Image 1 (cartoon, one colour):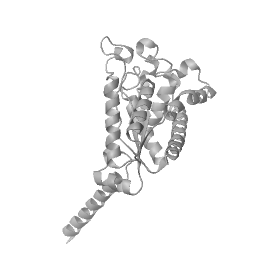
Image 2: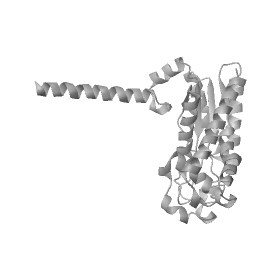
Image 3: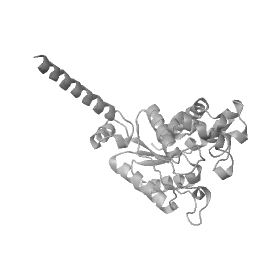
Image 4: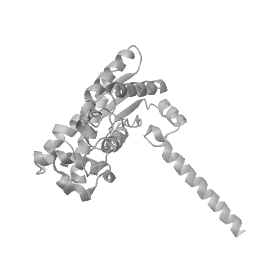
Length: 269
């Protein structure tokens, strides 16, 4: 009897664990973690906005992993979607224009960076957006974590809106996402005592702090002292970077992006 009772308990626990896993999956904001029926049900309940996050695979010095932009934009897109409450997040676009491949220019001078032609990049974005529209999403939001392709994101959104004229679907390029990480965040870091030379424009204190606040596993803390100068792929000084400083930037980005998405959706009604 005791053995039988034990089996019943184990079976019940397994069922409970299975239910918990299923509930957790259904509650995810990330499209790739859902089933098609989860997405169908979300659409039916009013979740008709989807964020298409764009990252990039590029060098960021000896202390930041090549997927810095991908990891960061995924986390931030999830937090933005959570605040909006009626939004899902599509898989991150990790292949973006990074400069000439041969002869190499820009970040392509460092091993590991991956670059694709602008036409291929825009084609992927357009195809993904068309797929999301076909699924039933009516607001497709483009955000990008890298400065180099912001113009292309705007162009793709414009092209999609011309193509979708007369339908209920709209594409939104949200410049506020990237803008918030620039002037406003840099000013906050200045008030915390960091110099412009430390804040930097690539892989410096600003960049590294944001990564520590979103995905610290992408940061090699023991290499911060090595991350100096253009020869190392760094423009800035990351040694005083911290998750606390990064959280200030995260809050700015999420706040400004949410406000911009809400405004864009109202304007397109």
